[in-house]
Length: 126
Image (cartoon, rainbow, N blue to C red; front, side, top):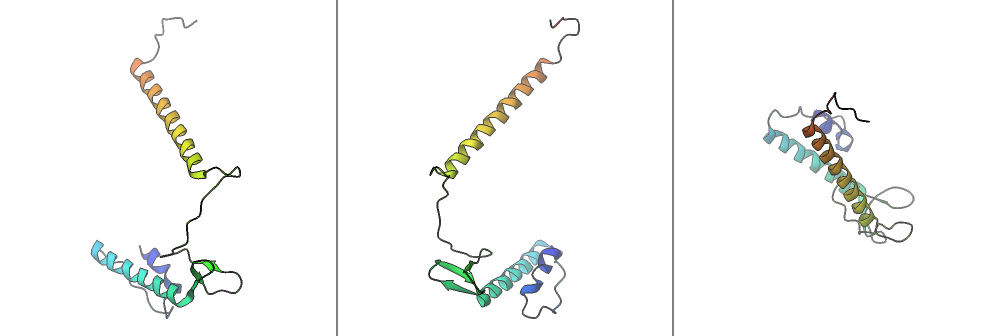
């Protein structure tokens, strides 16, 4: 957990400040992580702005708008389509269902083979 908290050092107002040692219990750790989240939100609020064209908060950087993707971003949803115009989520769901079915059938076959046991040595398989 100390690594997670130390990763927030660049977001401190005074980066030279010492970071706290990670708490020894969950309640203290929850408080520390809440404070780290507050530091990140403060950093975001000081270095981002609302971009009306993009419809979301963006970092203050030179060049094109760069949407904030770290904390509470409200980016308008967009549809994922394949090159043929089909819904990618539906295609992915079908692929996942097919794989799950194959894995289930392979496990079922392996279980059946395990219950039957090894073949008789005295039997000629040919």
